[in-house]
Image 1: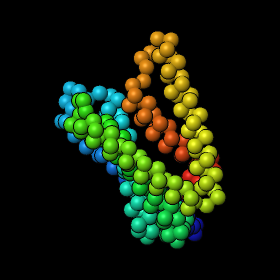
Image 2: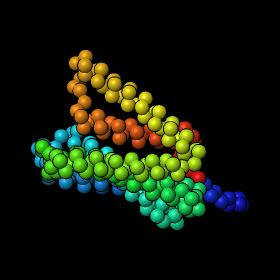
Image 3: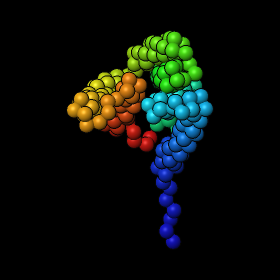
Length: 218
C-alpha cells in the first residue's frame, strides 16, 4: 500500500493563482459589462470604440486598485490572494501598497472621466478636464510616495518597468503613426494614444516583475 504524500504546493497554487485568476476574470467581466451598459445608455449611437476601450481600461485600473487596497488594509485577507509571502510582509509593505492602489484608482477614474466627456458624453468638458488633472496629479503624488517607500528591489523593478514602457510606447505608437503617415491605416485618435499609455505601462510592469521572478507562487 502506497503511503499518501502531502503536497503543500497544490493548495498554495490554488489559493494564490487559480482562485484569484477566476475571481479577477469574473470581476473584470462584470465591471466591463457594467461600464459598457452605462456608456451605451449615456452615449447611445455616439459610443465609439475609442471611448469604449478607454472606459474598460480605466475600470480595469480601478479593479486592480480595489484588490490591492483591500489586501493591504486587511493583511489576513490579502495573504490569501496577493502574491506575497505572508500577512507580515503585507504589513511591512502596507504604506507602499495603499499608495500604489490609490494612484491606480485615481488614474483609472481620470481615464473613465475622459471617456464619458462632452461633446458626446454626459460629463461637461470643463469638469472632465479639471477632474482628470486633479486625479492624475494626486495619483502621481501617491505613486511617488509608494516609490519612495519601496525597497531596493522594487525601486529597480519600477525603473525597469519605466524603461520598458518607453520602449513599448515608441514601438507601438511610433509604428502606428508611421503606418498612418504612409496611409496604410487610419491614425490613432487622441484618446487612443492616452489609452495606449495606460495599457502598455501596465503590461510592461508585469513584464518587469516577471523578469525578476516575482510572479512565482509563494
